[in-house]
Length: 437
Image (tube, rainbow, N blue to C red; front, side, top):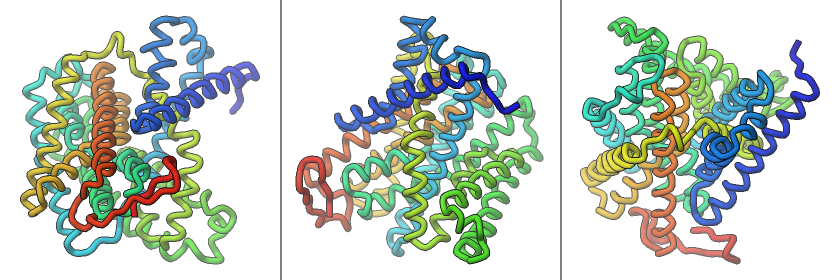
Protein backbone atom coordinates (compact mmCIF):
# COMPACT_ATOMS: atom_id res chain seq x y z
CA UNK A 1 0.00 0.00 0.00
CA UNK A 2 1.28 3.48 -0.94
CA UNK A 3 4.46 1.97 -2.29
CA UNK A 4 6.44 1.42 -5.47
CA UNK A 5 9.18 -1.08 -6.09
CA UNK A 6 12.77 0.10 -5.92
CA UNK A 7 13.12 -0.41 -9.67
CA UNK A 8 10.01 1.67 -10.36
CA UNK A 9 11.21 4.50 -8.12
CA UNK A 10 14.64 4.51 -9.76
CA UNK A 11 13.11 4.50 -13.23
CA UNK A 12 10.70 7.34 -12.46
CA UNK A 13 13.40 9.48 -10.86
CA UNK A 14 15.57 9.00 -13.96
CA UNK A 15 12.75 9.99 -16.31
CA UNK A 16 11.70 12.96 -14.18
CA UNK A 17 15.30 14.10 -13.77
CA UNK A 18 15.88 14.00 -17.54
CA UNK A 19 12.68 15.92 -18.20
CA UNK A 20 13.38 18.52 -15.49
CA UNK A 21 16.99 19.07 -16.56
CA UNK A 22 16.00 19.44 -20.22
CA UNK A 23 13.22 21.89 -19.27
CA UNK A 24 15.61 24.08 -17.26
CA UNK A 25 18.33 23.89 -19.92
CA UNK A 26 16.06 24.80 -22.84
CA UNK A 27 14.28 27.41 -20.72
CA UNK A 28 17.64 29.00 -19.92
CA UNK A 29 18.74 28.94 -23.57
CA UNK A 30 15.40 30.44 -24.62
CA UNK A 31 15.90 33.36 -22.23
CA UNK A 32 19.41 33.92 -23.56
CA UNK A 33 17.97 34.62 -27.01
CA UNK A 34 15.14 36.74 -25.54
CA UNK A 35 12.40 34.12 -25.82
CA UNK A 36 10.02 33.53 -22.85
CA UNK A 37 11.26 30.67 -20.69
CA UNK A 38 7.96 28.78 -20.97
CA UNK A 39 8.66 28.15 -24.67
CA UNK A 40 11.90 26.38 -23.82
CA UNK A 41 10.20 24.34 -21.08
CA UNK A 42 7.48 23.09 -23.43
CA UNK A 43 10.17 22.43 -26.03
CA UNK A 44 11.75 20.00 -23.55
CA UNK A 45 8.63 17.84 -23.82
CA UNK A 46 8.73 18.12 -27.60
CA UNK A 47 12.35 16.94 -27.65
CA UNK A 48 11.82 14.00 -25.28
CA UNK A 49 8.24 13.25 -26.36
CA UNK A 50 6.52 11.80 -29.43
CA UNK A 51 7.48 14.77 -31.63
CA UNK A 52 11.23 14.02 -31.68
CA UNK A 53 12.45 11.18 -29.45
CA UNK A 54 9.25 9.19 -29.87
CA UNK A 55 9.30 9.72 -33.64
CA UNK A 56 12.90 8.73 -34.30
CA UNK A 57 13.44 6.37 -31.34
CA UNK A 58 9.98 5.14 -30.27
CA UNK A 59 11.36 2.31 -28.12
CA UNK A 60 13.51 4.74 -26.13
CA UNK A 61 10.52 7.01 -25.52
CA UNK A 62 8.33 4.09 -24.41
CA UNK A 63 11.05 2.81 -22.08
CA UNK A 64 11.75 6.21 -20.51
CA UNK A 65 8.22 7.52 -19.91
CA UNK A 66 6.03 4.41 -20.06
CA UNK A 67 8.45 1.95 -18.53
CA UNK A 68 6.06 0.50 -15.92
CA UNK A 69 2.25 0.48 -15.63
CA UNK A 70 1.77 3.48 -13.30
CA UNK A 71 4.54 5.77 -14.57
CA UNK A 72 2.14 7.85 -16.65
CA UNK A 73 -0.05 8.38 -13.56
CA UNK A 74 2.94 9.63 -11.56
CA UNK A 75 3.70 12.17 -14.26
CA UNK A 76 0.00 13.02 -14.32
CA UNK A 77 0.13 13.76 -10.58
CA UNK A 78 3.15 16.04 -10.95
CA UNK A 79 1.42 17.67 -13.90
CA UNK A 80 -1.62 18.51 -11.74
CA UNK A 81 0.53 19.80 -8.88
CA UNK A 82 2.42 22.02 -11.32
CA UNK A 83 -0.86 23.34 -12.70
CA UNK A 84 -2.14 24.22 -9.21
CA UNK A 85 1.13 25.92 -8.27
CA UNK A 86 1.11 27.89 -11.52
CA UNK A 87 -2.38 29.22 -10.81
CA UNK A 88 -1.55 29.96 -7.16
CA UNK A 89 1.52 31.99 -8.14
CA UNK A 90 -0.57 33.75 -10.80
CA UNK A 91 -3.05 34.84 -8.13
CA UNK A 92 -0.22 36.13 -5.94
CA UNK A 93 0.79 38.50 -8.76
CA UNK A 94 -2.63 40.17 -8.76
CA UNK A 95 -2.44 43.99 -8.60
CA UNK A 96 -4.41 45.80 -5.87
CA UNK A 97 -3.34 49.46 -5.73
CA UNK A 98 -4.66 51.87 -8.37
CA UNK A 99 -5.59 55.53 -8.69
CA UNK A 100 -8.95 56.55 -10.15
CA UNK A 101 -7.61 57.08 -13.66
CA UNK A 102 -5.97 53.64 -13.72
CA UNK A 103 -9.13 52.00 -12.37
CA UNK A 104 -11.13 53.60 -15.18
CA UNK A 105 -8.64 52.52 -17.85
CA UNK A 106 -8.29 49.00 -16.45
CA UNK A 107 -12.06 48.55 -16.25
CA UNK A 108 -12.47 49.72 -19.83
CA UNK A 109 -9.75 47.39 -21.06
CA UNK A 110 -11.18 44.43 -19.15
CA UNK A 111 -14.53 44.94 -20.85
CA UNK A 112 -13.05 45.82 -24.24
CA UNK A 113 -10.51 42.99 -24.23
CA UNK A 114 -12.89 40.29 -23.06
CA UNK A 115 -16.44 40.70 -24.36
CA UNK A 116 -15.76 41.62 -28.03
CA UNK A 117 -12.97 39.02 -28.37
CA UNK A 118 -15.14 36.35 -26.73
CA UNK A 119 -18.11 37.15 -29.00
CA UNK A 120 -15.96 37.13 -32.15
CA UNK A 121 -14.43 33.82 -31.06
CA UNK A 122 -17.90 32.39 -30.43
CA UNK A 123 -19.14 33.20 -33.93
CA UNK A 124 -15.81 32.26 -35.51
CA UNK A 125 -16.41 28.67 -34.38
CA UNK A 126 -19.19 28.58 -36.97
CA UNK A 127 -16.83 29.79 -39.70
CA UNK A 128 -14.09 27.26 -38.96
CA UNK A 129 -14.75 23.60 -39.58
CA UNK A 130 -14.43 22.44 -35.97
CA UNK A 131 -15.87 18.96 -36.50
CA UNK A 132 -12.43 17.31 -37.01
CA UNK A 133 -11.20 18.81 -33.71
CA UNK A 134 -14.03 17.86 -31.33
CA UNK A 135 -12.93 15.58 -28.50
CA UNK A 136 -14.37 12.39 -27.04
CA UNK A 137 -17.14 14.27 -25.17
CA UNK A 138 -18.61 15.13 -28.61
CA UNK A 139 -19.95 18.49 -27.42
CA UNK A 140 -19.89 21.27 -30.05
CA UNK A 141 -21.28 23.86 -27.59
CA UNK A 142 -18.44 23.24 -25.12
CA UNK A 143 -16.02 23.40 -28.05
CA UNK A 144 -17.38 26.83 -29.08
CA UNK A 145 -16.86 28.11 -25.53
CA UNK A 146 -13.26 26.87 -25.53
CA UNK A 147 -12.59 28.57 -28.88
CA UNK A 148 -14.06 31.84 -27.60
CA UNK A 149 -11.92 31.63 -24.46
CA UNK A 150 -8.78 30.90 -26.50
CA UNK A 151 -9.31 34.13 -28.41
CA UNK A 152 -9.87 36.28 -25.31
CA UNK A 153 -7.50 34.82 -22.69
CA UNK A 154 -4.35 36.55 -21.36
CA UNK A 155 -1.37 35.25 -19.38
CA UNK A 156 -0.47 36.63 -15.96
CA UNK A 157 2.63 34.44 -15.34
CA UNK A 158 4.35 34.90 -18.70
CA UNK A 159 3.66 38.61 -19.15
CA UNK A 160 4.75 39.19 -15.53
CA UNK A 161 7.96 37.27 -16.22
CA UNK A 162 8.56 39.39 -19.33
CA UNK A 163 8.05 42.57 -17.28
CA UNK A 164 10.41 41.31 -14.57
CA UNK A 165 13.08 40.36 -17.11
CA UNK A 166 12.87 43.83 -18.67
CA UNK A 167 12.92 45.55 -15.27
CA UNK A 168 9.57 47.31 -15.87
CA UNK A 169 7.34 45.44 -13.42
CA UNK A 170 6.94 48.60 -11.31
CA UNK A 171 5.64 50.73 -14.20
CA UNK A 172 2.10 51.95 -14.69
CA UNK A 173 1.95 50.00 -17.94
CA UNK A 174 2.83 46.69 -16.27
CA UNK A 175 0.41 47.26 -13.39
CA UNK A 176 -2.52 47.87 -15.77
CA UNK A 177 -1.72 44.92 -18.05
CA UNK A 178 -1.35 42.44 -15.15
CA UNK A 179 -4.59 43.69 -13.56
CA UNK A 180 -6.46 43.30 -16.87
CA UNK A 181 -5.11 39.79 -17.29
CA UNK A 182 -6.12 38.78 -13.77
CA UNK A 183 -9.65 40.18 -13.83
CA UNK A 184 -10.76 39.05 -17.24
CA UNK A 185 -9.21 35.61 -16.80
CA UNK A 186 -11.47 35.10 -13.76
CA UNK A 187 -14.49 35.59 -16.01
CA UNK A 188 -13.05 33.24 -18.61
CA UNK A 189 -12.35 30.51 -16.04
CA UNK A 190 -16.03 30.69 -15.11
CA UNK A 191 -16.85 30.08 -18.78
CA UNK A 192 -14.39 27.17 -18.87
CA UNK A 193 -16.04 25.66 -15.79
CA UNK A 194 -19.36 25.85 -17.62
CA UNK A 195 -17.82 24.15 -20.68
CA UNK A 196 -16.38 21.28 -18.64
CA UNK A 197 -19.74 20.85 -16.88
CA UNK A 198 -21.43 20.53 -20.27
CA UNK A 199 -18.85 18.01 -21.39
CA UNK A 200 -19.29 15.92 -18.24
CA UNK A 201 -23.07 15.78 -18.76
CA UNK A 202 -22.82 14.23 -22.23
CA UNK A 203 -23.80 17.43 -24.01
CA UNK A 204 -27.16 17.87 -22.32
CA UNK A 205 -27.83 21.62 -22.18
CA UNK A 206 -30.72 23.09 -20.25
CA UNK A 207 -31.35 26.48 -18.69
CA UNK A 208 -31.19 24.87 -15.24
CA UNK A 209 -27.78 23.38 -16.09
CA UNK A 210 -26.49 26.78 -17.19
CA UNK A 211 -27.87 28.60 -14.16
CA UNK A 212 -26.61 25.93 -11.79
CA UNK A 213 -23.08 26.00 -13.23
CA UNK A 214 -22.81 29.78 -13.35
CA UNK A 215 -24.49 30.17 -9.96
CA UNK A 216 -22.10 27.71 -8.35
CA UNK A 217 -19.07 29.43 -9.87
CA UNK A 218 -20.22 32.91 -8.80
CA UNK A 219 -21.12 31.68 -5.30
CA UNK A 220 -17.71 30.05 -5.00
CA UNK A 221 -15.96 33.27 -6.06
CA UNK A 222 -17.96 35.48 -3.69
CA UNK A 223 -17.75 33.00 -0.82
CA UNK A 224 -14.00 32.55 -1.28
CA UNK A 225 -13.37 36.29 -1.29
CA UNK A 226 -15.55 37.00 1.74
CA UNK A 227 -14.57 34.03 3.90
CA UNK A 228 -11.01 33.87 2.61
CA UNK A 229 -10.45 37.57 3.21
CA UNK A 230 -11.69 37.22 6.78
CA UNK A 231 -9.52 34.16 7.45
CA UNK A 232 -6.37 35.64 5.97
CA UNK A 233 -6.91 39.08 7.48
CA UNK A 234 -8.03 38.13 10.98
CA UNK A 235 -6.74 34.63 11.67
CA UNK A 236 -3.38 34.37 9.93
CA UNK A 237 -1.07 36.33 12.20
CA UNK A 238 -2.32 35.20 15.60
CA UNK A 239 -0.75 33.21 18.38
CA UNK A 240 -3.55 30.65 18.13
CA UNK A 241 -2.76 29.85 14.49
CA UNK A 242 -0.34 27.02 15.19
CA UNK A 243 -0.17 25.90 11.56
CA UNK A 244 0.96 29.35 10.42
CA UNK A 245 3.50 29.53 13.24
CA UNK A 246 4.84 26.08 12.46
CA UNK A 247 5.20 26.81 8.71
CA UNK A 248 4.14 30.00 6.96
CA UNK A 249 4.38 28.43 3.52
CA UNK A 250 2.76 25.19 4.67
CA UNK A 251 -0.23 27.15 5.96
CA UNK A 252 -0.85 28.88 2.63
CA UNK A 253 -0.35 25.68 0.64
CA UNK A 254 -2.91 24.01 2.94
CA UNK A 255 -5.43 26.79 2.19
CA UNK A 256 -4.71 26.49 -1.54
CA UNK A 257 -5.21 22.71 -1.55
CA UNK A 258 -8.43 22.97 0.46
CA UNK A 259 -9.91 25.61 -1.85
CA UNK A 260 -8.89 23.58 -4.90
CA UNK A 261 -10.52 20.51 -3.38
CA UNK A 262 -13.73 22.40 -2.60
CA UNK A 263 -13.79 23.77 -6.15
CA UNK A 264 -13.43 20.27 -7.58
CA UNK A 265 -16.22 18.89 -5.42
CA UNK A 266 -18.49 21.74 -6.53
CA UNK A 267 -17.68 20.89 -10.17
CA UNK A 268 -15.77 24.15 -10.48
CA UNK A 269 -12.28 23.58 -11.91
CA UNK A 270 -9.71 22.88 -9.15
CA UNK A 271 -7.35 25.41 -10.73
CA UNK A 272 -9.94 28.10 -9.99
CA UNK A 273 -9.61 27.40 -6.28
CA UNK A 274 -5.83 27.72 -6.49
CA UNK A 275 -6.07 31.00 -8.42
CA UNK A 276 -8.54 32.53 -5.93
CA UNK A 277 -6.40 31.40 -2.99
CA UNK A 278 -3.50 33.38 -4.44
CA UNK A 279 -5.63 36.46 -5.17
CA UNK A 280 -7.18 36.51 -1.69
CA UNK A 281 -3.77 36.11 -0.06
CA UNK A 282 -2.44 39.01 -2.14
CA UNK A 283 -5.41 41.26 -1.28
CA UNK A 284 -5.80 40.42 2.41
CA UNK A 285 -2.25 40.06 3.68
CA UNK A 286 0.24 42.82 4.52
CA UNK A 287 2.53 43.54 1.57
CA UNK A 288 5.66 42.18 3.24
CA UNK A 289 3.94 38.90 4.12
CA UNK A 290 2.34 38.43 0.69
CA UNK A 291 5.71 39.07 -0.97
CA UNK A 292 7.34 36.52 1.34
CA UNK A 293 4.66 33.96 0.48
CA UNK A 294 5.07 34.67 -3.24
CA UNK A 295 8.84 34.26 -2.97
CA UNK A 296 8.54 30.99 -1.07
CA UNK A 297 5.95 29.55 -3.48
CA UNK A 298 7.95 30.73 -6.50
CA UNK A 299 11.16 29.12 -5.27
CA UNK A 300 9.70 25.63 -5.13
CA UNK A 301 7.26 26.07 -8.02
CA UNK A 302 9.58 27.47 -10.67
CA UNK A 303 12.42 25.12 -9.80
CA UNK A 304 10.40 21.88 -9.98
CA UNK A 305 6.61 21.74 -10.36
CA UNK A 306 5.98 24.38 -13.06
CA UNK A 307 8.83 23.33 -15.41
CA UNK A 308 7.63 19.73 -15.12
CA UNK A 309 4.07 20.87 -15.90
CA UNK A 310 5.06 22.71 -19.07
CA UNK A 311 7.43 19.94 -20.15
CA UNK A 312 4.66 17.36 -19.63
CA UNK A 313 2.43 19.47 -21.87
CA UNK A 314 5.12 19.07 -24.52
CA UNK A 315 5.20 15.32 -23.89
CA UNK A 316 1.54 15.14 -24.87
CA UNK A 317 2.13 16.86 -28.21
CA UNK A 318 2.87 14.96 -31.40
CA UNK A 319 3.50 17.68 -33.96
CA UNK A 320 4.47 15.12 -36.59
CA UNK A 321 1.19 13.22 -36.69
CA UNK A 322 -1.31 15.50 -34.93
CA UNK A 323 -0.73 19.06 -36.09
CA UNK A 324 -2.19 21.02 -39.02
CA UNK A 325 0.29 23.79 -39.86
CA UNK A 326 -1.96 25.66 -42.29
CA UNK A 327 -4.93 25.65 -39.91
CA UNK A 328 -2.66 26.81 -37.09
CA UNK A 329 -1.32 29.76 -39.10
CA UNK A 330 -4.86 30.86 -39.93
CA UNK A 331 -6.02 30.43 -36.33
CA UNK A 332 -2.95 32.30 -35.01
CA UNK A 333 -3.53 35.28 -37.31
CA UNK A 334 -7.23 35.38 -36.49
CA UNK A 335 -6.75 35.14 -32.70
CA UNK A 336 -3.90 37.67 -32.64
CA UNK A 337 -5.65 40.26 -34.79
CA UNK A 338 -8.94 39.89 -32.91
CA UNK A 339 -7.46 40.34 -29.43
CA UNK A 340 -5.01 43.07 -30.42
CA UNK A 341 -7.63 45.08 -32.30
CA UNK A 342 -10.14 44.74 -29.46
CA UNK A 343 -7.64 46.17 -26.99
CA UNK A 344 -6.34 48.82 -29.41
CA UNK A 345 -9.80 50.14 -30.24
CA UNK A 346 -10.84 50.15 -26.57
CA UNK A 347 -7.66 51.98 -25.61
CA UNK A 348 -8.23 54.61 -28.28
CA UNK A 349 -11.82 55.07 -27.05
CA UNK A 350 -10.32 55.60 -23.59
CA UNK A 351 -8.30 58.48 -25.11
CA UNK A 352 -4.90 56.74 -25.10
CA UNK A 353 -2.45 57.60 -27.89
CA UNK A 354 -1.78 55.22 -30.80
CA UNK A 355 1.56 53.88 -29.55
CA UNK A 356 0.25 53.24 -26.03
CA UNK A 357 -2.76 51.46 -27.53
CA UNK A 358 -0.48 49.30 -29.68
CA UNK A 359 1.69 48.39 -26.66
CA UNK A 360 -1.38 47.43 -24.63
CA UNK A 361 -2.80 45.40 -27.52
CA UNK A 362 0.42 43.44 -28.02
CA UNK A 363 0.95 42.81 -24.29
CA UNK A 364 -2.62 41.68 -23.53
CA UNK A 365 -2.44 39.34 -26.54
CA UNK A 366 0.00 37.16 -24.55
CA UNK A 367 -1.81 33.86 -23.81
CA UNK A 368 1.12 32.00 -22.23
CA UNK A 369 0.44 29.81 -19.19
CA UNK A 370 -3.37 30.27 -19.06
CA UNK A 371 -3.58 29.43 -22.76
CA UNK A 372 -1.77 26.17 -22.08
CA UNK A 373 -3.94 25.55 -19.01
CA UNK A 374 -7.04 26.07 -21.16
CA UNK A 375 -5.81 23.53 -23.69
CA UNK A 376 -4.88 21.04 -20.95
CA UNK A 377 -8.23 21.25 -19.16
CA UNK A 378 -10.24 21.10 -22.38
CA UNK A 379 -8.24 18.12 -23.64
CA UNK A 380 -8.55 16.26 -20.34
CA UNK A 381 -12.33 16.92 -20.30
CA UNK A 382 -12.67 15.49 -23.82
CA UNK A 383 -13.85 18.82 -25.28
CA UNK A 384 -11.05 18.96 -27.85
CA UNK A 385 -8.93 16.26 -29.48
CA UNK A 386 -5.16 15.95 -29.57
CA UNK A 387 -4.79 17.93 -32.80
CA UNK A 388 -6.65 20.98 -31.50
CA UNK A 389 -4.82 20.58 -28.18
CA UNK A 390 -1.59 21.08 -30.15
CA UNK A 391 -3.09 24.10 -31.95
CA UNK A 392 -3.99 25.82 -28.66
CA UNK A 393 -0.62 25.06 -27.05
CA UNK A 394 1.28 26.42 -30.04
CA UNK A 395 -1.03 29.47 -30.07
CA UNK A 396 -0.12 30.14 -26.43
CA UNK A 397 3.60 29.78 -27.14
CA UNK A 398 3.74 32.00 -30.22
CA UNK A 399 1.57 34.72 -28.66
CA UNK A 400 3.96 34.69 -25.67
CA UNK A 401 6.91 35.19 -27.99
CA UNK A 402 5.47 38.23 -29.79
CA UNK A 403 4.97 40.52 -26.72
CA UNK A 404 8.37 39.56 -25.30
CA UNK A 405 10.17 40.56 -28.49
CA UNK A 406 8.13 43.73 -29.08
CA UNK A 407 8.40 45.06 -25.53
CA UNK A 408 12.14 44.38 -25.48
CA UNK A 409 12.48 46.53 -28.62
CA UNK A 410 10.38 49.28 -27.02
CA UNK A 411 12.45 49.24 -23.83
CA UNK A 412 15.83 49.07 -25.57
CA UNK A 413 14.88 51.94 -27.88
CA UNK A 414 13.87 54.02 -24.86
CA UNK A 415 10.35 54.56 -26.17
CA UNK A 416 7.56 55.43 -23.74
CA UNK A 417 5.33 52.50 -22.78
CA UNK A 418 2.39 54.76 -21.91
CA UNK A 419 1.69 58.14 -20.26
CA UNK A 420 3.14 58.09 -16.75
CA UNK A 421 6.22 56.10 -17.79
CA UNK A 422 8.02 58.94 -19.61
CA UNK A 423 10.97 59.30 -17.26
CA UNK A 424 12.30 55.76 -17.14
CA UNK A 425 16.10 55.76 -17.15
CA UNK A 426 18.12 52.62 -17.79
CA UNK A 427 20.73 52.08 -15.08
CA UNK A 428 23.00 49.07 -14.96
CA UNK A 429 26.33 47.88 -13.66
CA UNK A 430 26.88 45.30 -16.41
CA UNK A 431 25.02 43.74 -19.33
CA UNK A 432 23.56 41.07 -17.03
CA UNK A 433 22.07 43.57 -14.55
CA UNK A 434 19.79 46.08 -16.29
CA UNK A 435 16.96 47.83 -14.52
CA UNK A 436 14.57 50.62 -15.49
CA UNK A 437 13.93 53.19 -12.76
